[in-house]
Length: 192
Image 1 (spheres, rainbow, N blue to C red):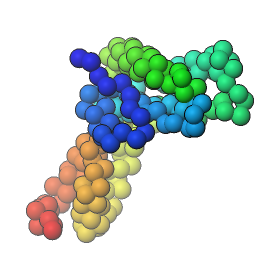
Image 2: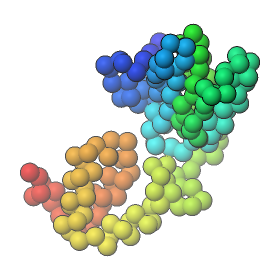
Image 3: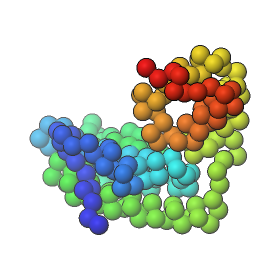
Image 4: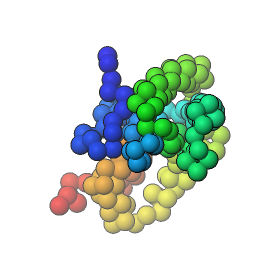
């Protein structure tokens, strides 16, 4: 399947949801004057918090950007890489932006494949700190939910539901619903 690898900032399409639905990296090109652009990438859609990632994607992108900046003489005042493990924004020459965005996409897809293979070799649900792939400590979350009053629990659940916070956090939804069920609370009684 051929994917749309990136969009420009003025695109009206919902590229984030497209990337999440297809498990592909999110890449946007922002114009910054005539000579420069910013490349913005995010690797969240690659796994959508359904599993842990083993590879720190940014650690593989930063050296390439450093090489690009040096090789292409990006002026010191324009040279910029801001981000970390799973997402970053970097300044590039406008003439290179589309090619680099396409190559960045391809490289992130290769890293995704390698990451999946490494995860398959040693899968885990909870890391050594007790956090799941959605980023919170499971036991602490269970305790927090148990300590909430019925009204607070239902209110928090409804806010999370309305704001779409559960869209990519199905495990958190299950923890809420399990606690609600354990109290014999019927959610339909609280629908507006």
